[in-house]
Amino acid sequence: MDQAEDFAAKLGDRLRRARHSGRWPQADVAERAGVSQATISRMELGAGGSITLDTWSAVAAAAGVRFIADMRSDAGRECAWPAMATTAARRCQALIDDEARSGGWKALTEIAGDEIETVLVRPVRGEVAIIRVWDALASVDAAARDLLRAIEREREMRVRSIDVGGLAVVLYTAGNRRRVAESRPILREVVPASGARWVSALRHPRLPMPREPGLIWASPDGWRIRPTPHRPGWQ
Image 1 (tube, rainbow, N blue to C red):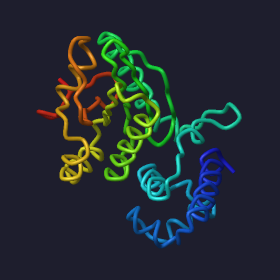
Image 2 (image 1 turned 90 degrees about the vertical axis):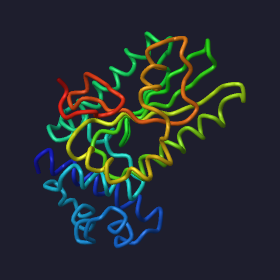
Image 3 (image 1 turned 45 degrees about the horizontal axis):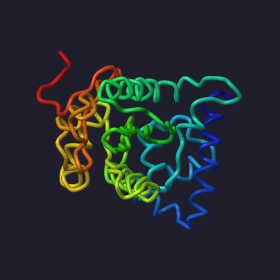
Image 4 (image 1 turned 120 degrees about the vertical axis):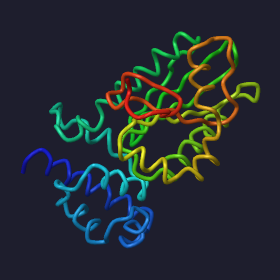
């Protein structure tokens, strides 16, 4: 069994256990993910090595499973498939940390999951920001709702004088652009704040964080961010 097949078998087992834990039929998970029941069956049987990352991400979101931490390595060995899936997201995470440092923010927590999360804190202004990096975006609705839940969890842990906000950073790939365009009504509801205001708040210590969650783009290589894609390319 090669590395991709080995990872697929492990992920399939996690998917099966998560589905059983939630008491979801394969057909329900398949419908939410937009795939066939046969695809779910293949994954759970360990035969998903040739299934695309987009499909794995969609099924993971539908079943509430976090995969990337497990995909990253196996007993210290790197696997080419997960490495390609996470390198840009890791660069993007580091980029956000660097950008936010100039604005007086400090990165306290980093969590690897289907989305990579950073918790930024700016004590001078009493602000906390949950930053989610969306790499291979499968379900916009699921990812956006998960961001809102993360914000609410953080608020529950903080005193009322602390403002808690959230920002989605989306890699500017063809697939992600298409999914964002198709999901604009959801995004207007869930992440309505101006991306430009969020970028400014990250970079400038005197500018307040927007009260509502927002969304910005990151270049495919994970080296640059911008509020919105005004024109194609990154020239």
